[in-house]
Amino acid sequence: MLFIVYHRHTAEMCPGGKVHPDKEFMTKLAEQSKTAGVNIIEGYIDGPGHQFYLVFEADDSMKLNSAIEQLRLVGDINDIVPVLKFSDAVAWAQKAGIQK
Image (cartoon, rainbow, N blue to C red; front, side):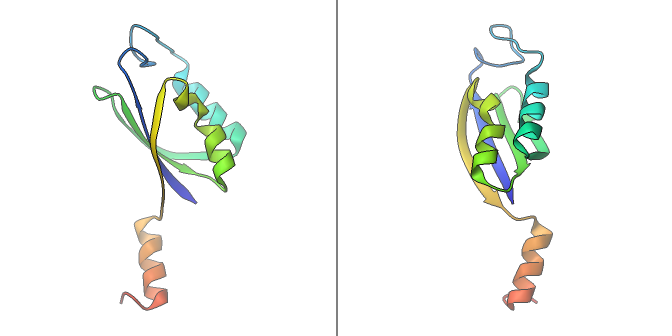
């Protein structure tokens, strides 16, 4: 299942900032996700806004929670939203007869 995880941190806690820099942050996030059995499909980062929008593929919420622990160390998880790819949603809607 796919999940969009919305993360936000302060400028002071930014792993790319000057107060608490962490040059290994992205590597740690990727390794933690892999160890948890979760794939990072894609990520979108608003650097000046200190916000991440990450798309994960996970079998269950326990694995996902383990994968995103690195994000919690520097800020907040503002939302986790289960989503479908648009193409999968279209196929499901057509099969269900609610779309042509």
